[in-house]
Amino acid sequence: MVTTKQRACIVGLGETRYTKWGQMGDRGEWSLACEAVMNATQDAGLVINDIDGLASFSNDSNVPWLLQHALGLPNLKWTSMVWGGGGSGACGALAHAASAVESGSAHYVAVFRSLCQGPGHRYGQAGGYNELPHLNFMAPFGMFSPPIMIAPLIQRYKHEFGAKPEHFAEIALVCRDNAQRNPRAVMRGRPVTLEDYLQSRIIASPLRLFDCCQENDGACALIVTTQERASDLRKKPVRILAAAQGGNSGWYDGALGSHNMPVDEYGAGNGKTLARDLFSRAGLTPQDVDVLQIYDHFTGLVLMTLENFGFCGRGEAGPFAAAGNLRWPEGRFPLNTSGGHLSEAYIHGLNLAVEGVRQMRGESTSQVKDAKTCLVTAGLSASPLSAALLGV
Amino acid sequence: MSYFPPEISGPRPSVDDQVFWNYCQRHELHFQRCAACHRFRHPPGPVCSACRSFEVEWIPAPEVGIVFSFTIVHHPAHPAVAPILPYNVVIVDFPECDHVRLVSNVVDVAAEDIRIGMRVSLVWESVGNGFQLPRFRRSA
Image (cartoon, rainbow over all chains, first blue to last red; front, side, top):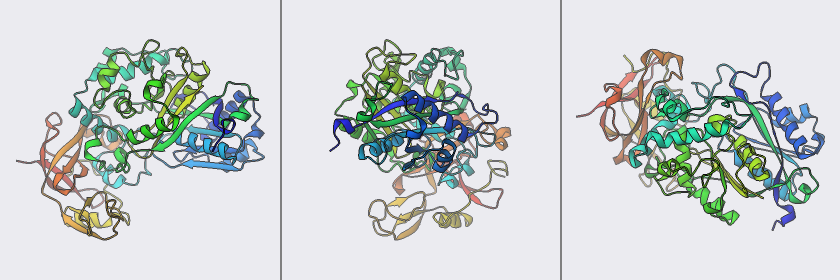
């Protein structure tokens, strides 16, 4: 049994500048990861020598010895990597870090993700996801990139539930609006109206340009330790109420594979079992949540996630969103208050967790008043995905 | 003639899917099925997820499938497809085979006419590196 003093919490956050892909000049993923970890360490009021654990996900190129060497870590004793699946491991890495500090395997774990997409390595182009195990059943048929992989799920969702363009637009507009208040957001200064959305070009039907997240370069990091150690540090600790990996069975690699997930879940998403497990572990229900950071690789998958995690019934997320529930500040569940992947930056989900920490500290540029509980989700459509509930 | 330009090559078979592609080279669409509990699965894999048997058999697919979902692609994620935009990608369902689905293309239907529920039948196309791919045309 883990005592309260041993429970994991987040005590530091750090970022590099976020840019559109290809604009980091001569810097690469190694350099960006180092900067993010150093910034997070400083934010926590720690020194870099304190960091004794490293966790990342999605096969981050920064294998531990790169950071151990560059940062001169004197006491690295625990490392973890959550396997592939785009950003579906972001909260998984957080869960691993929490286990590490709660078991005493490490004292201060830096959870990080660094992305720098040089020419020929863009996620939005053929070749960006060459490691997918079932590419033989996709690429010869023109299914090269995530929008093309995800679009048939959204098409099916529309077919089954009659979702309208205005429903998907609401997700894009909420994120873009929040980004206008966030100086880190790549899309700050570029507001979008419903008319802009409806006139934007089709990428892969029914996905329009503004339904798809950005391709960005940048890195971010969080520092995880125990509540006992956190009491000596600078910032108000943010508790990890629960963090878990999971996903419905039978999904395989889902939309990033051959599209042979269970027929009745194809247009619904694979997050229901994870959601049940997560809320049960925290002893909370969706109605206890004050603010949402939902993995927004594509607007339609945000709608499915809202349904999977119990904020509304199956097929109801479009009208639920259109009713203003996700708007800041007046909505019941303000969504992606940094701008999310759609409008802050696509750092594979970890920047959503960073924003969750800011909300719990009261430091967001779109702060939800008296927010005490935040849901962060990572991925939807390949298993396992992951999610976390943060609280103060 | 192929749906895509020759730069879009065929598969690179692995130890796990080689048999599927061997059948394709003979213009035969076969799906893997568990030899113990007779449950279909795709893509091919080593073990039946229902009964955990390693024994497999290969069963001819029906000639007709159903468009389960689709997308019309307008953005060239690969430079070679730019001249042929827009193109379709369809998910073809075979309900008789435990809803095994193939990602493929419908070669003879205009983008605006593709619908979920449309019946499609198998055609074979040669691609740049000599592979034979299962594609589809509108079925009566």
